[in-house]
Amino acid sequence: MADQLIMSVTQLNKYVRSLLEDDPNLTYIFVVGEISNFKAHYQSGHMYFSLKDEGGVIRSVMFRSSASKLKFTPENGMRVVCRGRVSLYERDGQYQFYAEDMQPDGAGSLAVAFEQIKKKLLAEGLFDVSRKKPIPSYPEEIAVITSDTGAAVKDIFSVLDRRYPLARILFCPVLVQGESAAKSIADAIKRVNALQSADVIIAGRGGGSVEDLWAFNEEAVARAVAESLIPVISAVGHETDTTICDMVADLRAPTPSAAAEMAVPDASALLSWVYSQKNNMIAKIDFKLGQARLSLDNLIKKPVMQSPLFFIDQMEQRLDLSNTNLSANYLAILKDKDVSLRFSAAAINALSPLGVLSRGYAICYKGGKILKSVKGIKTEEVISVNFVDGTVTCDVKDISEK
Amino acid sequence: MKSTDSFEDCLSRLEEIVNLLENGECPLDDTMKLYEEGIKLSGYCSKKLEKARQKMVTLTEKEGESVGGAESIETA
Image 1 (tube, rainbow over the protein chains, first blue to last red):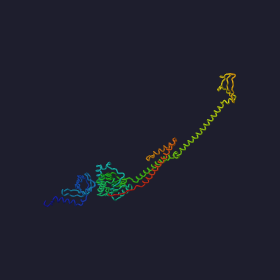
Image 2 (image 1 turned 60 degrees about the horizontal axis):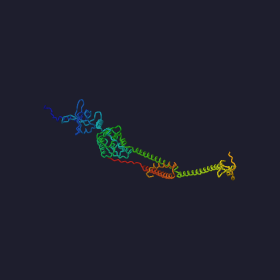
Image 3 (image 1 turned 30 degrees about the vertical axis):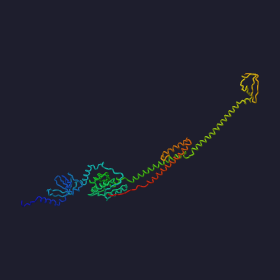
Image 4 (image 1 turned 90 degrees about the vertical axis):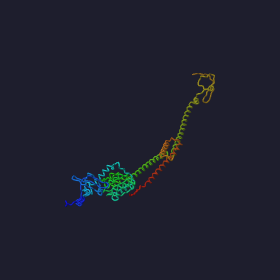
């Protein structure tokens, strides 16, 4: 035993540690396994877990500097591929794996992260249709949150200018990809809300890869959109790209240009409508005035209004007619009377005693009375006998009754 | 006929007068009075129509100016 080298525990651990750390095969390795006993210390930011498979287990740690870069949240049971190195932690003699990067085995880490965030926010009700606010029809101010380079901002401005130039634009240039993008976008949304002047927000960016669009899937952006009191139109990438921001927003537009079109009405269409309404109104008033004029003209054209003397003429005509009738009637009456007179005269003549007398008849009188009969006459009485040309006084000698 | 009488009321009265005169049964004095009223009414209605038409032409010309476009982009 005296010839054997006797090491201390510390020396032994140090030696094994250097063996592990100096081995070129072990400095940059990829290990696949299932996560178990996962524990994240929120204060330090370090993650402690085990990787295992059917044959064995290895204790693992991922320090905060690497862990904070993970897009997804590791969970027990998840199968992952980790890049890292092995070493010995001298203090407890524990052999462990130091993970510097972690990817879900099979699905990409972004895909896994997307599903994790989506599930979480869905459960909180952030995607509910009932939460979605209506977009104002005639916004006075539109906040545009996007990169100040790239096609998106140009497209949005040009559509807004063409369709509805009377709206003010509040432009908030932000980072739309990279580590700081999510905070940049979320802060812009909060700032616009604090100013309280905008009626609607358009937030988005042009097309890109999943990584490029990732900022719009981050929780910070999603929560800022959800908490925004001003309605948000999300316009991220192309029609086929759907991000968490799209799901939380009050309205989803397939592209930034489409977002601008959804935000405002078409002013030229509105103007046309206003003009046509005006023309309509003018036509109606014109018609009514025309009708009124027509009614008035019809009345004024009537003979009674046109010839003021008309009714006087009528009166005169009536008068003339009466006059004529009067004369005619009078003459007629006279004529009539004349005829009657002649008739009567003739009749009288016919009945006149002078005519009778001239025919040889005589009228006898006694004591002034006309005698019509032999009765009442006595002999020795005196009677007068009138002839046509004189009178004879006679004594009655003899009476003989027929 | 007050200045507040409506066009329609005056037109109706004018119609009434024309009918009465056409019937020819009015006494002469009434006829004179009615004719005078009728002439006044037709003048009044004509003036009212003219005014309405003038006002319409004036308004239409005034509103002929087009709507301008206001553009302002603020940055925040």
